[in-house]
Image (tube, rainbow, N blue to C red; front, side, top):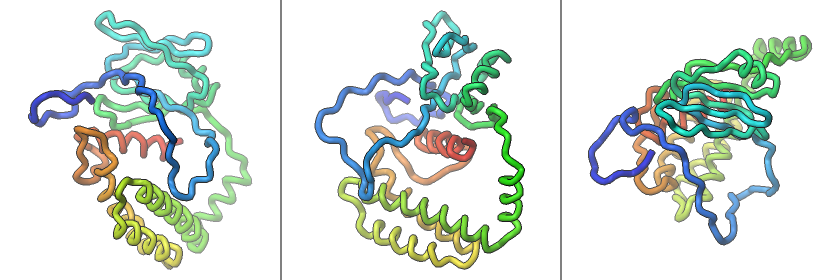
Length: 244
């Protein structure tokens, strides 16, 4: 989205999508979050195309994205690519789909607003022993609670570290998140754990507006059917995290 003059409220569909510009090089030291150990995580890249794109052309080492109205094609390098988000109606040939699956590149299909409605991914076989262990885990309330507890605690811990990295951070919110983490570690039921997860999320989203760039606002979390840029991008990111 691009900031324009005037304060008239417009729908996301009216704003349109723009090609991102290469960010200016920043000088100075790169800050780290509290508790960060350094090094690089082996995370793959995600490319977003559309909604004005018409079709993708497979080329050695890259995808060539074609557009309507005589717009110049763009290239998407395949090196390090983990997922592809397709906005709107984009033509995908069976050959392109097969090649993407061969490289274990998932395709998330979404409408013009960024709301996902489907996914294409490589067929990765799961060993029978793993499937059996998963079934046994689901049938065990104790195991389910242990797994859920570890996931929620990790999520709340990440909220805490993000909050600590915000300039002029809210100390009351940080203390609230720390207490919520301690409570989650001792949760004795899934409903109790859900309540703590929601409370921690609400605390973090109360801090999030301080992290946004000029022209962006965040009043509350909306998922799905969001109409504001911040929630739309959060929904896309959460969908990728859930599906990959």
